[in-house]
Image (cartoon, rainbow, N blue to C red; front, side, top):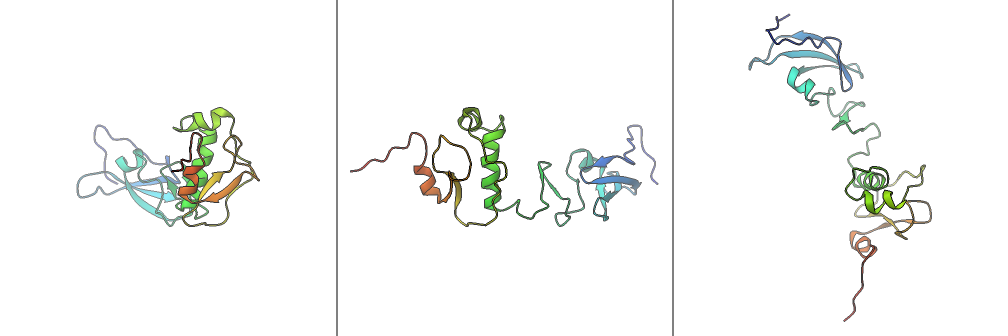
Amino acid sequence: MPSGGQNFIDLTGQPFGCGVVRERTENRKDGSAQWIVDCKCGNPYLATTSNLRGGHANCCGRKCPFYENTGRFKDVHGKARTKLYASYNQAYNRCYNPKHKDYRNYGARGITMFPSWIPHKNYPKMELDRIDNDKGYVPGNLRWATHSQQQLNRRGSRITRP
């Protein structure tokens, strides 16, 4: 095992993302310290100290069932990169995340989501929309709408006729 310099930090046994550092191995050609990490799925992988500590090597790869996408959620259901999931996730965050830019127009006004409602079909080119903007994301107040339809269903929208 390579010896560490004056600033050496032993990462052996420390968890990073969905892996635990097993041991240090040979340095990379650029001199970066490299570690063998055991992923939860059983696959070992190599990672540098800077990638581990910076959160850039938190799993053995995108095909791993424990892959963490930017540390915010685990893509174990295979839907996290779909437009449908993004729409659902945005709606949820507008209602429950005070740091979301639109929280003041949703969660702060008491707009909530029906807890057990989870999208299960992929509607291409459609977005999640509330029929009545003063009510929450609950059964009976949800529909799938095109972007154009959704833009007309906003507070302050005015339809002008020639």
